[in-house]
Length: 177
Image 1 (cartoon, rainbow, N blue to C red):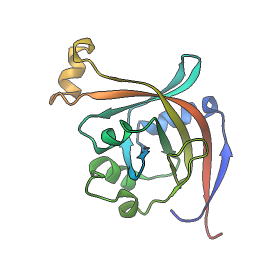
Image 2 (tube, one colour):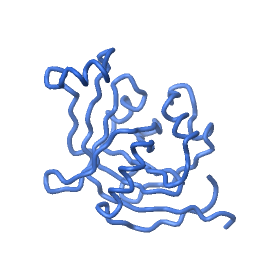
Image 3 (spheres, rainbow, N blue to C red):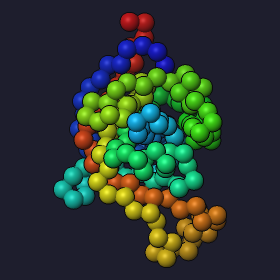
């Protein structure tokens, strides 16, 4: 998407329902540590209030390129598209950032974060800038068998990242300016 971003600060609670509805269809998790960068599709997340803070919780499998980057940083951004981006979500969810420049392939642009170093995608949507407050690998002994069989047949368990929402905003992309 090309054009200038029009940003409007938003209260995370007022955006939660719309964001969670879209996340079920797909959203973008962006991570950056130094020169290492990746964007991947997520379809699972929670938004809530824990430890006296607004939190955005994401899960990343150890086998993913994103895992190796998020482990080197203390932050992440989630960009939730509010327009049809099925093609871009499919590419970012099926191809590895180890071998594919997903931004280039999807013709996506980024812009700097407001409160963190990790950028957001230049798309019409809702964006959450988050600082990781806690992380924990899933312990299979504490997971119900139905989830293990259905979601983890290869024992490729997620690590859960609790990110304090330090900034939430919505964007529209103004074309031709």
